[in-house]
Image (cartoon, rainbow, N blue to C red; front, side):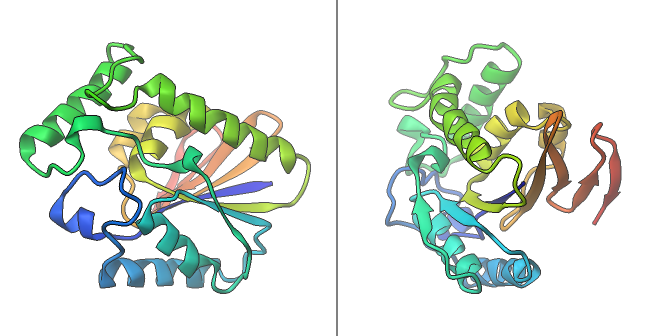
Length: 214
């Protein structure tokens, strides 16, 4: 079984640098974003996907629709894949807001305060509580099969949660290789766990050594 994690294409919020993680109707893909996803869709056209799951946010839904055009599956929407709720930073685009967001991640990963949050927002532990059981269920459902599962979500939740899942990718690697728009992460379930084969153009060995960077 393989899980294909995709980050959405460029959205209007990426252009304006605005926190837009709660309103499911705002900030669609830009023309550039649609082109990015269409190019990825062509690369994935030959993959026989078994199921597709997507975050409810508009940019993720539009990305999933483009990727699904050649496959005709039902797009299963789940809040488990929603972007991190940044609380009172929502709607802001100023440098101070982004510095506060960066500080929150440092509080989680360096100080190990996993209950820290922005006012009105979501902690690391709360994000883990919704994301991890969903992914575990998907893995268990398709275990010991040749299924290919496509998941469409967001950079923040991927960088926060995937190092908990992947046997050969940690937080240091992730933050040296920030996911771009329409980034693709290909993983495979093996006896030792979920192994990352490709992280946004970087091919990895099961021990995490870089094979090559595209």
